[in-house]
Structure formats: structure tokens, C-alpha cells
Image (cartoon, rainbow, N blue to C red):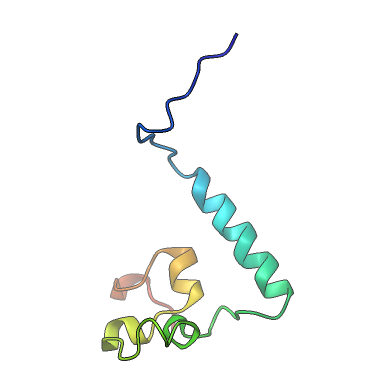
Length: 76
């Protein structure tokens, strides 16, 4: 028998959650929302009505590539 997992104890899932995130974003994009270049704050304006400048330029591409805020990683 397998070991019972204690769901109350945090577990390190390493990078497995990234795969689920990419699949979810890909499916949403297939439905026409959002584009990789859309601004994240525009999608949640009711929760963040006045985002700081650095957050205001955040896109789904930044989230998926995990490179926002690092000048050496940004694309032209």
C-alpha cells in the first residue's frame, strides 16, 4: 500500500506547478484570452485599481518566463 499523504503539511512540488500553469494559460489563450502581450493589471483592474509602474507593465509572458524585473532577461 502507498503512503498516506498529510495534506496539512506543505510539500515541495518543485516545478510541477509550472506545467499546470502553462497548460491553463495555453487553454485560455486558445479561447481568446489573454494574449502573451496583454497587461496583467488590465485583467484585474477591480482588484488593483492603481498598480505601481513596475507591476503595470507585467504581462503573461513575464509570468510564464519568470523574467520580469531582470534587465538582462527582458526582450526588446
